[in-house]
Image (cartoon, rainbow, N blue to C red):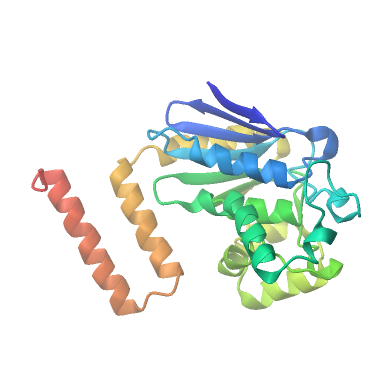
Length: 260
């Protein structure tokens, strides 16, 4: 069932699995504020019984990054030019970027597990969108690159935190500061990719992983994801032990029906 199809984004739901597709292969799924608004809308439109969200893209490339027209004086039709934004107040710039970031931040909400199926180029905003997902399954032709710093900018679409979490500070800094390509073998070796498969097997591998993730009870998965996110966000060892105890207490009571 298709719930959304606009501005290069399509949302379809099949039972507990939702699929968000970047659907503008002619432009290598270049991104724009309109696409980001559609991604945010897709997240808000998810039915409550969805447990897995797959992020995929049509064509040979996952996403070539931001539509370069955004940096021209005329900008993208109907959108504020980034050159105009540069002359806005600090508050306006902050608020505008915060709205853009919503398209990238909802993928890690606790009630779903998100999987990015990434093939071909994932550049700049495309790289950050892949990083937005909990898990990345990549085709063996994947090429990641964070080009923002090379253009005099910074990665500002929620990508810095998951990149450091995946590959560590030193490698993340080197990847961002050089803007170089990270190919499939390095992505898998460093933890940027959870799994690398031949390009023709990408959809099948994601389907198999989705089925495996649906095997455990939903509430247990939600609690486990929350625990792991807390550990990754800097809880102390003792704080994490306390969080584990509290989560397990909830699980005991739920399974025994004692919480009713």
